[in-house]
Length: 258
Image: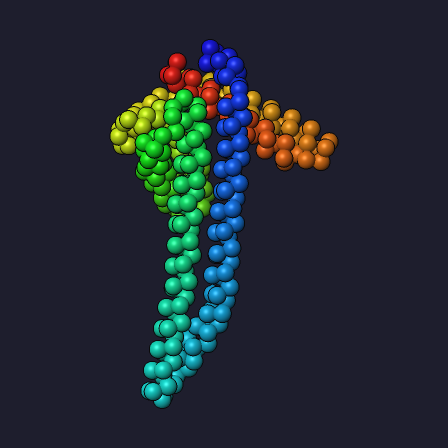
């Protein structure tokens, strides 16, 4: 409870800076998502032009053409159209990977500044370099595991494993940030985080407090927001406040009690 009381008393101007950085991060993330969806939309429109041509050429080729020259010409065109189709599909994959890398970079930049404030560390060049490296070494593999998990059949199993991977990543990411030290090597930090994160017994009560308090604040914000016709805006503001408080609280728990 000492950590809980102390987390309430640490609210200051720096906490407002954290909330502002959180807001900026989500704004950039929305822009990245919009860019990804726009790129996919352009690629899909191109596919709409390629698909009918593929179907037409395939049906013609299957129609039993006796002219070898014409048959050869049609098959060459068919392969050319297929290559265009595969390249468009590859562009979608590339666009998605670029989105993931940029999203991790945005996370590393904004969250790096936030955690430097929480941990009371200088946001130096060494801090930035190590934090970026750590985020890519941690979040990108988590993303790949998530993609592999949701591909499993049946769909319910894939969704369940996907949720577990997300919870796993959130929990250990929090531990990773709370125990971050730019002087340590990347994989040492990951190993230490896994060791700390496994001991979840001491974090059950803090997690429950965070969930309950966040739920109450967001619920109240929704009710008040309905009266002023801005329910989602107030709920989002409540979420940002809860996020800022939860970071402080968990870090204090790990430092003083874990």
